[in-house]
Amino acid sequence: METPGHLIVDIARLQPEGEIFSGETAAGLMDMGARAICEPVGGIAYQIHVEQIGQELLARGRVSLGFRCACSRCGESFALEVVETAFFADFEVTAGTEFVDLTPEMREAIMLALPGYPVCREDCKGLCARCGANRNRETCTCGPALDGSWAALDLLVKR
Ligand SMILES: [Zn+2]
Ligand SMILES: [Zn+2]
Image 1: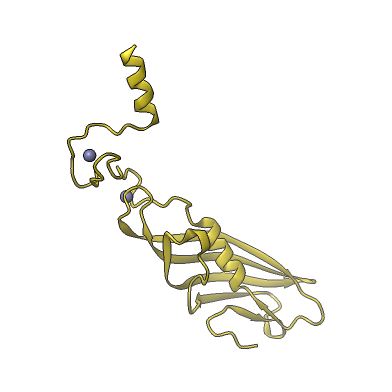
Image 2: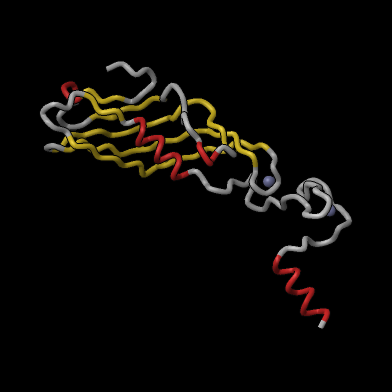
C-alpha cells in the first residue's frame, strides 16, 4: 500500500508498547467544501502516539495545519494556524488488517477545529454596512452601523 504523504501504520511493524509518529502529510485538505473561505497552506503536521490494544488501534496526539483565510467580517486575507491537541481516533484491527491510514481522521479533526466564521482578529471592526469602508483602517462619516441593536435603539428614541 503506497499512498505518498499519508500517515499509514504498518500493523505488523508496530512496536508492541506503541509508537510515536511525527511528521507532515504531503498535502493538507483535498476538499474544503463549504469552508472554501480558508485555503490550506502546506501539509498537516502531526505527532501521534499509536498503540494496538487487542483488536483496537488507538491513536492520540496533536495535529495542526496552517490556513490562509478571508476574514468573515472585513474580507482581508490572514494566516490562521488550526491546532487540535486532543486528536483521537480508534480503528478495528482484525487478522486481515495490514495497514491503517490515519490521514482521513486527521483531516476531519482539523476541519472540526476550524472556526466557521474566521476573523482576522478578535476585535475586527469589519466593513461599514453603508459605504463599505474597512473600519479597522479608516473612519468613515456614516456613523455607527445600523445593525439590529442600533435599529431597535433608534425606534425607542423616536417614540
Ligand atoms: Zn477582519
Ligand atoms: Zn461608512
